[in-house]
Length: 432
Length: 143
Image (cartoon, rainbow over all chains, first blue to last red; front, side, top):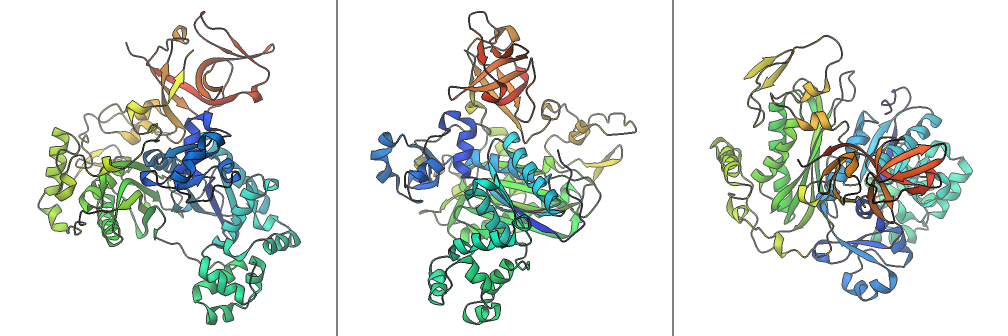
């Protein structure tokens, strides 16, 4: 295992993400899926949210409803899988833990991508990128690509190149690409390929004669600010190599909510992290309620302080919630599953929660976020005690108390086993 | 509120099973990784799993590895990051399926062996033609 890179020069950003994450996670445990067109379907087996390269090659667009694909699946040899969020959550946690070992500074950006702070000579960075790629493949069994650049926006672009251009062999370093080649690549990319640029904005840019990434890079940042926004100006500056997108700490994406913070002073005790995770649990609950969502899978993680010569640790756990929920007590309790992995005395600089397998709350009105006083009244420990004695799901608050919850209404006919989180669903190996 | 064990403070309220039974003798030098998990009971995770990111548990179906003490229904602890060597019990991909075999790498070639005379050896032209999914490190045999 490689050591974290020594901090010497200007920091660079490595953007790492898993290729076709859900499909790759499925393939990691079912080699028969290798080379076959594969789609992973959204909740209720609605539409294709992840497509393997073979499925893309068939011309299946992202978001294609399954009922349209199903009649032709046999003819195509197309395999469909229902979302298996327990599996994806655990694979994600393993990938993130592994990535954390390669850099002192990491921002988990989504279930399948992270930004790492890295430093070194161009060839060292390229070598680091390859080590990261090889390590994830070897340890977890999923393929990643790595883009390394001075800014997040460029790192994401480099990752795209690494993915789409076999010559890069999965790792692209901005400084390693000669100037003319860079310009040629940028001139070939349309502007909506840039991080944060989509639909309407693209059309407005096109009206101004900005069609490619190179056009945008060459636009006057001030004019862009005046015509559009300071956000787009930052994008232009980032394309020019000036880092201006800070660490983001909270994000609600297509199918996940990430909630993490760096601490102003390190937290050094299990008790301290218990409090922090409790607060996050409540805040994440409020955030879910605001968007009318519930989560079924929670990942909690922490990371030690990067700029210290102390021992490093990046513990994380993935918890399958007993039912889809936005309940702050349940979320907090799930988040506390991280605590046994926390060591007193280490300096934790960051902790966070990632909620996945999100779905609309449905007919049940969302519970108002509880306040601390519930904890003080001892409801938490009481619940924990009852659950311990009578089993998980034997007691809950409000509609969280419904044992079967709403989960059984979900259609997941084609879900693969939860290979890594359920003892009775382990991968089978043939001895024959 | 803490209980002092060696140089670290362990909060007695920290986890469900946190009452330390007896502190282990602390030797000078590199600390045992198992100490990190010290909560007074043997933690199988600490002893059986070297690297949590690359360790998976699989279940065996079939009797072809009986000779290695691996029976139908047993669970194997598999480390995907280990380099397969001559003699390793490996999980190999054969015809799109995960298959457990004994790996033999000799001058004569690469062979996947069953540990049961009922099953023939499988010759592989080169190690590079073989996809090794992981290396089994322990068998959880049902006795």
